Length: 234
Image (tube, rainbow, N blue to C red; front, side, top):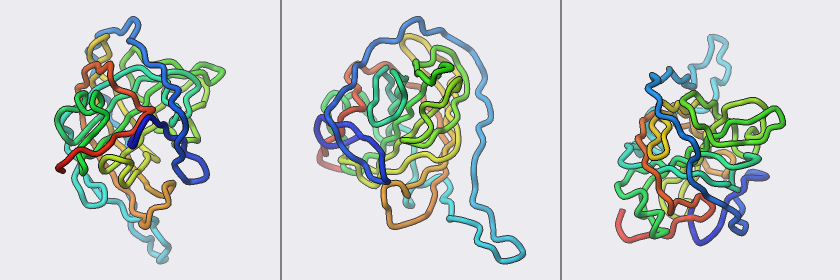
């Protein structure tokens, strides 16, 4: 998400920028639903077994690199997010740990230490072509650059950064996003995610497990194909 009019493409474990190709548009035929939130599965790193085998990476609970992620604001828009690998438009929800989420998209800049998560959601047909969801439901995490073209599925691809200009990026490797309300103005739901920075060649193998809720309003200035510049302050 950061630095000029660019997009992300995750390939060969690096994040590469290309020219912006997004074509955002309004929600068509959104429906107001009063569906309850389902329980989303979480993933923990368990202890070593009795034989002393490696239990896998350590899992941070509720923090990313030791920093809590507390939702302050959120926005949504329909886009073709080329850093994600859906074959068609999706519903993109931007969740931030600072206030003024839509204002940040409008300005193209976010706080130096302003954490952001982009939840990319789509429903695919039998050919793997994507359309934005218009109904409540659960969307299982698909790895960035890997699973977004699965056929007949409700999918979520998730990108996290610890601040502007792609600071400390992570991607979801397990979990789900659950929508409880989808209308032409509002998107509401919750997430239960396990994040990893391994695909971004980070120095640690630690995973981060975070949960939260969002109540997002439409933001016509939202464009996930560009990245945030930095504003002053944290």
